[in-house]
Image (cartoon, rainbow, N blue to C red; front, side, top):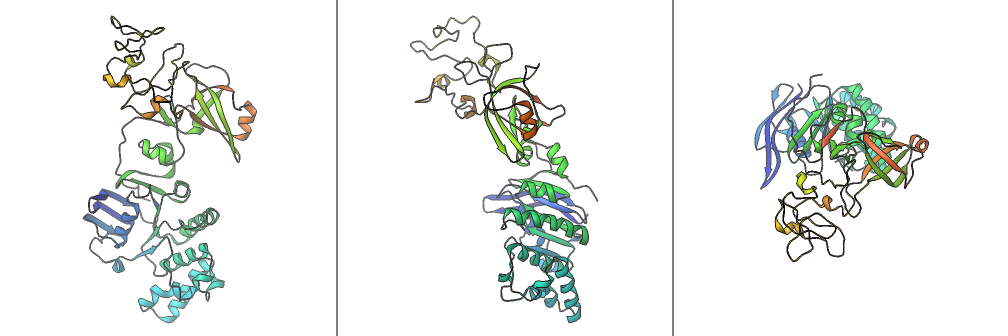
Amino acid sequence: MSIEIRGVGKRFGDFVALEDINLSIASGRLTALLGPSGGGKSTLLRIIAGLETADGGTVGIEGVDATNLPARKRDVGFVFQHYAVFKHLSVARNVAFGLEIRKRPRDEIQRRVDELLQLVHLGQFADRLPSQLSGGQRQRMALARALAVEPKVLLLDEPFGALDAKVRKELRDWLRRLHEEVHVTTVFVTHDQEEALELADTIVVINEGRIEQVGTPDELYDEPANRFVMGFLGEVTTLDGQLIRPHDIVVHLTPQPGTIAGEIVRHQRVGFEVRLVVRPHLVPGSSSPVIPGSSSPVIPGLPRDLTNPVVPGSPSPVVPGSSSPVIPGSSSPVIPGLPRDLTNPVVPGSPSPVIPGLPRDLTNADDPSDIVVTLTKTFANALGLREGVRVWLEPEQGARTVGAGSRPERRDCAEPAA
């Protein structure tokens, strides 16, 4: 293993940036630290580099305990998001800087600089100042400077974050090819899921200072450890109480056993893709989807008696036209087993019932039961799908689903050896 992290933690006052991090990164791999802003990924990268001191735990680099080594002795190259270039030095002098302070021979420095500038396609710009380069060219110069000292580990902190989408895409392709040429162990921080999925050999998902899951891009996308990983790595929607990828939903034009009926309320084309918003059919006057073959509404995650229209043996009076008991002197229905205040019938100005203490989506105020489906434009057109069309939905056979209300389980994992 190139990098071994054991029991690392870091706090900034009362804020827990990292908590008991255990991670092994194999030599020669391109590894992404992926997560939301504030999740701890940049802090972990800086601890590996020696730019930040951990409160506890150890960091090993190529078999050497680097926990207490200063950054200059760790033999790592570091690339910042905003380049950190020397504005008064030429491109060649920027690349040569690390070699010059190590007092390498002049001819060795010249040879190494020429070699790296050709590698990053900047040979013709050697005498220019950084201000005369584009953003993508400055980032390539920063990478060449980090590689000049032949580090054991290359660390990149959101290296493409300051660039526009087209340049980011070009640099991702370029960095992948560069890594295949130099084979240096590389760890980069990103919050861009597409960047991590496209570029990395291994992805480490970090959230709230903890590792959620470690694996290859395919493993994390196809077999997420929990709902956070599934939701962070790609689009998700909810079908029958389960999180599922929108492209893993099968659309039928006729009723099928076990399917959920609905109506297309929005049809949106995005390039070659069509995104459908399907609203499940509801009980008239209710915001709850219907159990097939029944008129009883379903409120996912609540006890069945909340949808049972009759309370057996109850002497309570009922709302006219309903079998639900009422509070004496009131027309508000009682939901057995819930506190009395849960009978508040409506939001002011809205016909939707309010059940305080329950998730907002149970009142369907913003149509949270809507299901998103993605299809290719060709397939959607072949089926004749458009707004107002009635459809029946079910998960694709073998599709990965995660309970929308399931408790997340984090995984601290070692990366497999190369």
